[in-house]
Image (cartoon, rainbow, N blue to C red; front, side, top):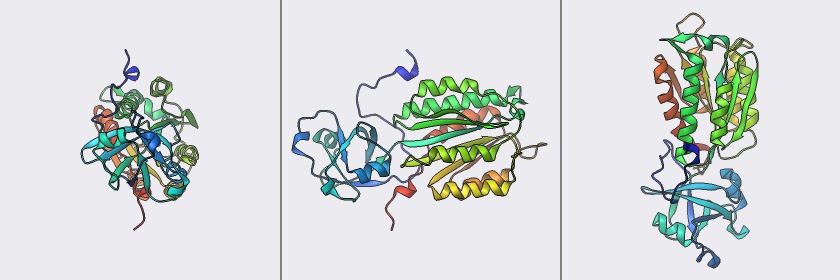
Length: 301
């Protein structure tokens, strides 16, 4: 049985927590009809469903103290208004040890793009390992970790070499995503601007947490750095975080522009990682899979 065919026996899991503050909701009294429903459910207004980018039938993870519970999303009453509130059925409250009036954390699904450099230089070797092959392994590690986290996050893959190409649209079909990773092949220039622009377009519709993980080993060749920084500012205005990863040394001939990658991350609230040892790339992507930024979902002070 493959990893993506595993079925959890219970809704409560030891799921990894995020590294950022999570939005909170206040629990209202549940509906009487929910008493007999054994599956843990959360009832959210349209306002809250839009905010967390979830629909009826989706799942989100709730956290209270050290308890993490995956619950199914259902609709609530319009009378709940546009406050940061929700209704849990007794089954969900029991699993969380939560009471009416408590505030609990929400870990909604994330929509993210893995933006991968497939320029010709990604066919070069570091310590006997082709950069593209190491990247494929790292992307697979990222996808597998997302699956094991159980947050139903949606992942898309975009490559940029001679052109920017959508390898796979946003999906939580993790097995298909992993299989599509095999199509990444080094070729041509470094169309980073086009890749970032296309990633922003794909993330413009979803609400909730949105992120781009940008990996490159070189400098952009189709536009200057200022146009890419302008795109980063556009991403920030849409609450899209960009984490950047530089492969190899920025001091190598035609190495990546570390200043640019740091700037992109800083503008959008992301992180920058320099990967000198290609064998560490999968570990870096494993850590990136666990990081989400929900700061824009927190109530304004």
